[in-house]
Image 1: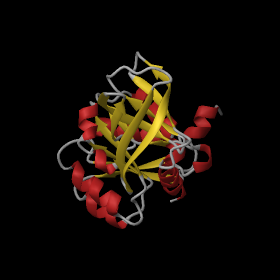
Image 2 (image 1 turned 135 degrees about the horizontal axis):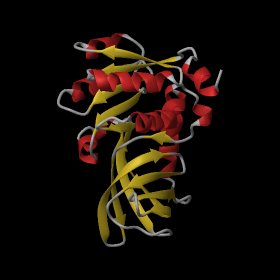
Image 3 (image 1 turned 180 degrees about the vertical axis):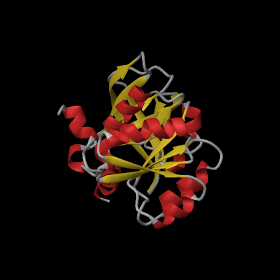
Image 4 (image 1 turned 90 degrees about the vertical axis):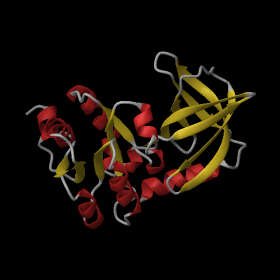
Length: 230
């Protein structure tokens, strides 16, 4: 038996809710999650009611009108408020409409199996609660950036106690100093200084290391630790 076959037959140890997805998307995502031992449960119709009553480790929600109801239930639920939320959509703008809910990752449409599998692979440790092996939290939210006299908006990709990766159309350079501000779920709006450590011009992404002398970064570390412990 090959390793891939062994993985695909692993006993499910976590559950993901697939909320009101079309059949083609549901089939692709169910197969992707199954390869990592994650069971997929299709929720159609009264999904919010089930998310109030049942424990899930993740959910996949179409980024469309009505998604707010599902996400609000998830983030206000005592048992599900820390679950991983995947969005299904096409653009950063789609995601930013729901940024206050702390979406962790987005499947782009049209859904492609290999791309979806790559995203599940990169986040499955968080779904499976293997937190010791996952020190970064994938989360998409709006980041206000100030560098010198220039200000612009970026989108977070991942956050850790020491820094974060971001995406922006504005050019930055390694070593560039900046101050960012953002609010995230239970973390009220915070400001923290940092320096750019790397950039990928082709993808418009860059990494920011928080300033070790900025005491405000401790609140971010506390939030990350609390998120991973829940």
